[in-house]
Image 1 (cartoon, rainbow, N blue to C red):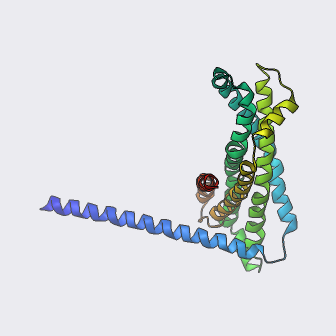
Image 2: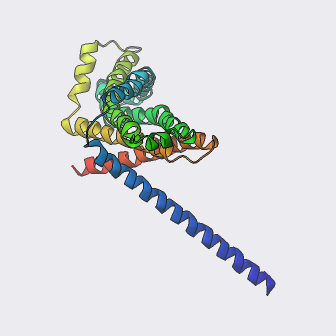
Image 3: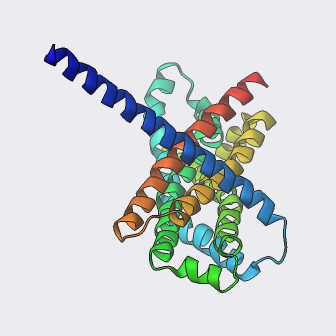
Length: 268
């Protein structure tokens, strides 16, 4: 009888723990949704912190160009090298530029760019705002009648929303150039011929959705990174947790948005 009671109590405790976890998840999801809606309300209200917006664009765009360009170059070269033996077996080497361009523009370029920004930009925003919350700088701004959300969150989110699409376009061009150099390891092709063959296989339905979804990538990277840092708990440990959770949550959001975009594109 005692063992049955013990099993019942353990089962009840597990059910209560699962219920509390779901409640906590729903509370955080609702809080994040309210945070996102607050951004849309605040971004339409002047005055705008133009100096801070341009500075954040510099940090997000210029400071990330080398890393994203190097990664895109390697991805374009590796994709060409790995696909060449299979294409050569079917006598379809001339189709490699088109295959590389479609793969890079539709999927690889935007997603790789967004993931790099998740790790580099999202973690920085989470740690930066988290340290400001821990050291009570955000509280001091509120006491001084300064809106910290308008000064800290909106410029950073706008910067990621605007810069990630530009970085993705740069990554696409560099990846195609890497594919051109990799193709010239075994074959001889001019740069003009390679890019003409690559562009011939691209259509509007390939380019437009890929560009549009990068705006959503940039938005979720900025808003999630700011949210995790803005709502960091007290203590120095929370700064690292905010940076880590910002990377994980924004990366997951990028994959979810990419899956939704792929389904919508397939319907079109």
